[in-house]
Length: 570
Image (cartoon, rainbow, N blue to C red; front, side, top):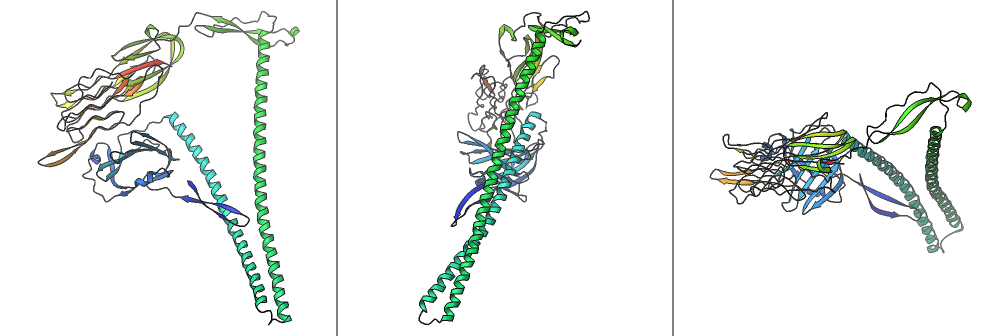
């Protein structure tokens, strides 16, 4: 809830802060009776419940910390980014629903993605000039990511705490308003009585030569009564002020008690740490004690480590003469089997970039953590559009090494245009197989299609025919219009996933988005979606219409780029 201070009201003795509670603005209203038959986006595969909406762009103004979205609910503003005229706004709510809204300043258009905790996705898209639709995407499936869900739950708990604090502030405001009204009433009564007293005095002065002894006595009695009333009102006002001071004193006392409890907690922590150190010291004394061994002692155990320095243990029995009353204790001693092998790939490298399918040898001992970045092959092109770029995945794995570990890598090949069937072929998935572990797989880009949705989908979408460049950095491919004697047709570029490349292994290599394939003139086929560059480089460009980088989408009969795998020791 947004609380804004609107004004201060001053009284002779007491002032109170009045707050204004503002309702969240609605981002758009649903037009259930609107005609969506001409909206191309509503005809896409996986789209349902497509409804025309009327936008309220003012809801995204910087001063609004909340927005209301129909069928979603109220969302709290989280943060914003601005890149070259593209504004990214992020929202969430207590139901763990997230919203990512992008505003393109040059096109004066908005797109939005709303994801519920169940994985259900709603989208806001432009369908023409001053035309927007709100629809449900049914192709997404929900997966439970424990780490992300726990993070969202923690955020939700923090939001709930803030809302409880806001509720307490609101109750204090209401109490302040009530006291203010009471004190305002008392002050008003004082003013009325004072005015009445002044009127009586003026009447005495104006009618001095007519008044009689009886009238003087009556007026003097009224003056006494007014003074008594004023005295009582002042007494009530003093009581109200004293009550406020008592409340402030209680608050100061509560804060002091909290500080005392925090200091006690710190003292207990210090005491606990001191006890731990004492226990550790006593344990060390027991290990260092010169013990007289008896025949019941056990043999030394195997070394605790397979390589490098470890320890051996055995059980000892202490004689009664040494003060331990026949107790059984554990003795230890250091041991070393062999030197450990430093974890590395072939030629002692700490990371490896793999562009072709092959086996990778990892040397080392014990448990190590490796990082993996992988890209699928780009989607094949078509005479009507460009293919989408391959998807990417990042993951960390803990592997138990015993000198040598073999990792099998299968690089996803780029798709192509099949002349025999006159269709585009999707990019192949990239796969990594670890012995004894679940394989990692990432899908390739989708091919261009022979219909109005001519651009293929992927990390970056392929461009449509008649003028559509491929998308880049997770964006959609460019759409265009086709004109003939029958009329005008909207040709749609492929859908991008809108995912941002991760900042990983920055001290070893740098990932960056490649440019989308270029469509040379309005009658040309669409360009392929841009792929991924490593240290600013990618595979050689076979055609400017093919998406730049690994996993870049294909263009017409030119094959799409293959995928990529990077593995490094963390």
